[in-house]
Every structure is written in C-alpha cells, then in structure tokens.
Length: 308
Image (cartoon, rainbow, N blue to C red; front, top):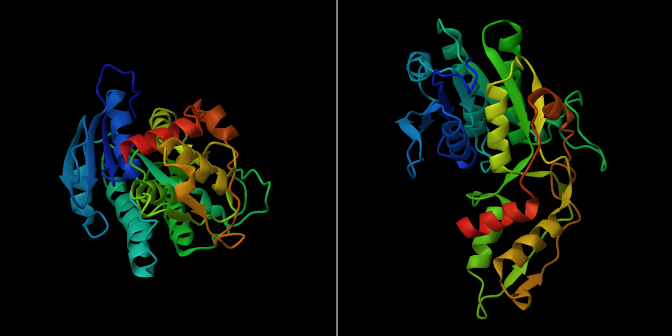
C-alpha cells in the first residue's frame, strides 16, 4: 500500500460508497490525494472527487468484483444495512458480500489493502461503565450485530491465512451531516423539521448511554488505517465517551431552534433492546493509528441539522 503522501497517486475503491459512511470516506480519501471509485447498487448524488460504478457486490460474481477493485491500492467495505430486520437480507449484505469481496481480492496478483468496517455492537451488551477494549469477548445480541461479526471474522481469518492484507475498524454510532433517517438522530432531525404550533412533537427517548462519534472522524480513521501497517488488527473507533440519549436529543432540539414548548416528553421504557451502554476504549486507535476524535458532539449535531 502506498503512503498517502507518496508522489504516486494511490487509488481507492469504497464499497457502499454512496451511503452515510461511504460518502464521507470517499470525500476524505479524495482530499488526501486518492483516486476514488465509489461502488454501490445505485447512484444518489454525485460525490465530489469520486467516480461511480453501479455494482451490487452482494450478488455480483467474484470475477466482476475483482475487475472493479483490481487496480486499487485500497478497498474499503462501508456497505451494510442497520435498518433491516430480515435475516436473508442481513446475511447477504454483511456476510456473503464480505466473503465474495475477500475471494475477489485474494485472486489479484497485486492485492490491495482491505479495510472492513465493523460495529461496536459485535461485542454485545456490556455492564454500564465498561470501556470496551478490542480483547473484550464477543456476544452479539441482535441479528445486525451477529451478521456484522461474521463479516469481521471472514476478513480477519483470511488475513491470518495470508489471503488478504486486512484490518477491521469496529465503529461506534456515527453522527454528523447526512445522518440517515432510519437512525435516531436523522429521524429526530426530520421530526423537528416538521414540528409547528399545529403539530408539536412528542419526543420519546430511551434511557440509554451510547458512544457517538462524528462521521468525519470515522473517515479520517479510515485514511490513517489505510496508510498504517495494521494488518490483521481489530481497532475500535469511537469518541471514547458514553452520552445519554436524552442529552443527545436535548442538544439536537437546542441547535434546531425549535421552541421548547413544541417538544413534549413522552414515556419510554428504561432501556432499549440490545444493550443500554456503549463506550469504546480507543487507546489502540490512538497508539497504532495516531487517531483521536476531533469533532465535538455539539458541532456534529449542528452540522447534522444544517445539512438536514
């Protein structure tokens, strides 16, 4: 893998390049001098600095995938679907897609670096107050987390076997501009946009505490991991802080400028499904990648609101 500062322009392929994470990753890689190709089922809006290739990697042949990534120095798998609750679909996007991608990369004479984006939820529920390090046992409690863990293991096992030069970044919850509607913050922003004197918002928030990190910080972690020899490693990427979901909602309501009397508090269960606490231990990312989160949560939510 060429260092991003080399005179030779490195090339990168981002699978799922038109999604929330993928778009920001494409933008960050292009800003660091990469020739970027975004691969996804369908194009949405053009991504500055990136070309686009329509390809459904989940159903494509190994040969088609190999052709798409064959000239790349870096392949980032940012594909995934947190909003679905369908086992066949989740397995296709989080397990079969990764398996096909690994098979394709392993056939290439000059193998690109492969970065798999996993999730902190692969660890499963943990006791409140736990800073989750990379050696914490995995016990995923949801279909999404189980299938994502299977994908992470495919990359790590293939790397151990010498088939690919792989690394897994295990992400906490992403926030910032472009947050998707199926996520809590994107959905809340849309609800606040629709709030009026005639249509006040009843806001129901579970009493969870979760680690949220700005999507641009995630993208910068990808850039650093691409240029660092962290082969076979599993690295947490998060803010390193657990924030109350109620506090998070309060910040977004405040930056939206919606009058407080138009937002009413509803009743909610004490905790949501799948664990009420996430806080990543990010010391390895600091030491190995030289990475730390830089975007404060309030700024992230202000930018989310401005872009919504």
